[in-house]
Length: 119
Image (cartoon, rainbow, N blue to C red; front, side, top):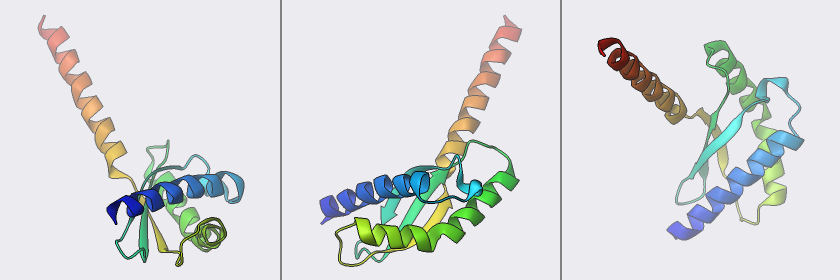
C-alpha cells in the first residue's frame, strides 16, 4: 500500500506543478515551486508543500491566498488527469525545510567569517 501512496504523491506533485504553470493565471502564484506532497493512507486528504523565491512575509501571504483561491481549479484539473477513484481534498502549506536550510547556510557563513577574523 505504501508503494501506491508514493506513486500517487509523485503523480499529484507532477500534475499540480503542470497545472500551476499552464492553467492558473493568478500572478500571486508565479514563482511557486511544489516541493513535496503527502497523501493520507485513505487518499482523502493531500498536503502540498511549496516554496517561493521571496523571503518577504507579504509575498508568502499573497502566494498562500493565490493558492487557496486556485484550489478548486487545481482539484478539478486533477480529477481529469488522475486515474484514482476519489480526488483528495487539497491543502497548501509553505515548506519549512527551505527556510531552515537558508538558516543553516547563514550560520555556516557566520562561522567562516569568525574563523577568518580570528586568523
